Length: 143
Image 1 (cartoon, rainbow, N blue to C red):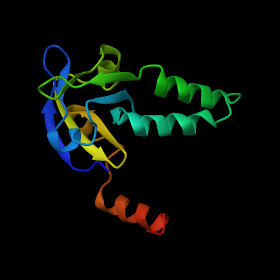
Image 2 (tube, one colour; image 1 turned 90 degrees about the vertical axis):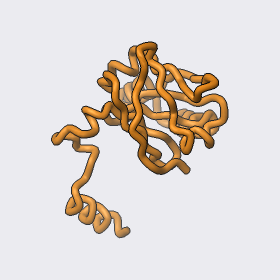
Image 3 (cartoon, one colour; image 1 turned 90 degrees about the horizontal axis):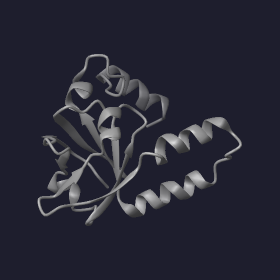
Protein backbone atom coordinates (compact mmCIF):
# COMPACT_ATOMS: atom_id res chain seq x y z
CA UNK A 1 0.00 0.00 0.00
CA UNK A 2 1.37 3.37 -1.03
CA UNK A 3 1.21 6.34 1.34
CA UNK A 4 3.02 9.57 2.07
CA UNK A 5 3.77 12.72 0.06
CA UNK A 6 6.99 13.97 -1.50
CA UNK A 7 7.94 17.08 -3.41
CA UNK A 8 10.17 16.41 -6.38
CA UNK A 9 10.66 17.56 -9.96
CA UNK A 10 11.36 16.45 -13.51
CA UNK A 11 14.52 17.22 -15.42
CA UNK A 12 14.93 18.56 -18.94
CA UNK A 13 14.68 15.01 -20.35
CA UNK A 14 11.24 14.51 -18.72
CA UNK A 15 12.67 12.13 -16.10
CA UNK A 16 11.33 12.06 -12.57
CA UNK A 17 12.75 10.33 -9.56
CA UNK A 18 10.11 8.19 -7.92
CA UNK A 19 10.71 8.68 -4.18
CA UNK A 20 12.55 5.71 -2.66
CA UNK A 21 9.84 5.15 -0.03
CA UNK A 22 7.32 4.60 -2.86
CA UNK A 23 9.64 2.96 -5.38
CA UNK A 24 10.37 -0.02 -3.13
CA UNK A 25 6.99 -1.61 -3.82
CA UNK A 26 7.18 -1.10 -7.59
CA UNK A 27 10.05 -3.44 -8.38
CA UNK A 28 12.03 -2.45 -11.47
CA UNK A 29 9.02 -1.63 -13.68
CA UNK A 30 5.72 0.20 -13.36
CA UNK A 31 2.79 1.44 -15.44
CA UNK A 32 2.26 5.19 -15.82
CA UNK A 33 -1.08 6.48 -17.11
CA UNK A 34 -3.57 9.35 -17.00
CA UNK A 35 -5.41 9.69 -13.72
CA UNK A 36 -9.06 10.57 -13.27
CA UNK A 37 -8.18 14.05 -12.08
CA UNK A 38 -5.53 16.25 -13.65
CA UNK A 39 -2.75 13.95 -12.44
CA UNK A 40 -0.90 10.80 -13.41
CA UNK A 41 -1.17 7.36 -11.82
CA UNK A 42 1.67 4.92 -11.29
CA UNK A 43 0.72 1.26 -10.75
CA UNK A 44 2.72 -1.84 -10.03
CA UNK A 45 2.49 -4.23 -12.97
CA UNK A 46 0.42 -6.55 -10.75
CA UNK A 47 -2.08 -3.84 -9.74
CA UNK A 48 -2.30 -2.69 -13.37
CA UNK A 49 -3.24 -6.26 -14.36
CA UNK A 50 -5.96 -6.22 -11.66
CA UNK A 51 -7.33 -2.93 -13.04
CA UNK A 52 -7.34 -4.34 -16.57
CA UNK A 53 -9.22 -7.42 -15.34
CA UNK A 54 -11.90 -5.21 -13.76
CA UNK A 55 -12.17 -3.09 -16.90
CA UNK A 56 -12.50 -6.18 -19.10
CA UNK A 57 -15.83 -6.94 -17.40
CA UNK A 58 -17.38 -3.56 -18.23
CA UNK A 59 -19.87 -3.45 -21.13
CA UNK A 60 -18.03 -2.04 -24.16
CA UNK A 61 -21.41 -1.35 -25.75
CA UNK A 62 -21.62 1.64 -23.36
CA UNK A 63 -19.95 4.72 -24.91
CA UNK A 64 -18.85 5.90 -21.44
CA UNK A 65 -17.01 2.63 -20.89
CA UNK A 66 -15.24 2.96 -24.23
CA UNK A 67 -14.24 6.53 -23.40
CA UNK A 68 -12.96 5.41 -19.99
CA UNK A 69 -10.91 2.61 -21.58
CA UNK A 70 -9.38 5.09 -24.03
CA UNK A 71 -8.59 7.56 -21.26
CA UNK A 72 -7.03 4.95 -19.03
CA UNK A 73 -5.29 2.64 -21.53
CA UNK A 74 -4.44 4.56 -24.69
CA UNK A 75 -1.68 6.61 -23.12
CA UNK A 76 -0.45 4.10 -20.56
CA UNK A 77 3.29 3.53 -20.64
CA UNK A 78 5.32 0.70 -19.19
CA UNK A 79 8.31 2.30 -17.49
CA UNK A 80 11.59 0.87 -16.27
CA UNK A 81 13.64 2.55 -13.59
CA UNK A 82 17.14 3.70 -14.40
CA UNK A 83 19.99 3.37 -11.87
CA UNK A 84 18.96 6.64 -10.19
CA UNK A 85 15.35 5.48 -9.70
CA UNK A 86 13.98 7.66 -12.50
CA UNK A 87 11.27 7.04 -15.08
CA UNK A 88 10.52 9.08 -18.20
CA UNK A 89 7.16 10.84 -18.36
CA UNK A 90 6.00 10.75 -22.02
CA UNK A 91 5.15 14.18 -23.42
CA UNK A 92 1.44 13.31 -23.85
CA UNK A 93 1.15 12.49 -20.14
CA UNK A 94 3.21 15.50 -19.12
CA UNK A 95 0.88 17.75 -21.13
CA UNK A 96 -2.26 16.11 -19.70
CA UNK A 97 -1.10 16.69 -16.10
CA UNK A 98 0.15 20.22 -16.96
CA UNK A 99 3.57 19.34 -15.57
CA UNK A 100 6.24 21.97 -16.01
CA UNK A 101 8.94 21.28 -13.39
CA UNK A 102 7.85 20.80 -9.77
CA UNK A 103 5.83 17.76 -8.71
CA UNK A 104 3.88 16.49 -5.75
CA UNK A 105 4.07 12.69 -5.60
CA UNK A 106 1.79 10.87 -3.18
CA UNK A 107 0.85 7.38 -2.22
CA UNK A 108 -2.85 6.70 -2.76
CA UNK A 109 -3.39 3.13 -1.55
CA UNK A 110 -2.92 0.84 -4.59
CA UNK A 111 -1.33 3.52 -6.78
CA UNK A 112 0.91 6.58 -6.72
CA UNK A 113 -0.42 9.94 -7.89
CA UNK A 114 1.88 12.44 -9.61
CA UNK A 115 0.66 16.04 -9.67
CA UNK A 116 2.04 19.25 -11.07
CA UNK A 117 2.80 21.27 -7.94
CA UNK A 118 1.00 24.27 -9.47
CA UNK A 119 -2.15 22.22 -10.16
CA UNK A 120 -2.13 20.52 -6.74
CA UNK A 121 -1.62 23.84 -4.93
CA UNK A 122 -4.19 25.80 -6.94
CA UNK A 123 -7.00 27.21 -4.79
CA UNK A 124 -9.62 25.78 -7.17
CA UNK A 125 -8.29 22.21 -7.04
CA UNK A 126 -11.38 20.14 -6.22
CA UNK A 127 -9.23 17.10 -5.45
CA UNK A 128 -8.21 18.54 -2.10
CA UNK A 129 -10.73 18.72 0.72
CA UNK A 130 -10.90 21.18 3.55
CA UNK A 131 -11.59 19.84 7.04
CA UNK A 132 -15.33 20.40 6.90
CA UNK A 133 -15.71 18.68 3.52
CA UNK A 134 -13.55 15.81 4.77
CA UNK A 135 -15.69 15.35 7.90
CA UNK A 136 -18.89 15.50 5.84
CA UNK A 137 -17.57 12.88 3.40
CA UNK A 138 -16.66 10.56 6.27
CA UNK A 139 -20.19 10.88 7.66
CA UNK A 140 -21.72 10.31 4.22
CA UNK A 141 -19.81 7.03 3.88
CA UNK A 142 -20.51 5.98 7.49
CA UNK A 143 -16.81 6.01 8.24
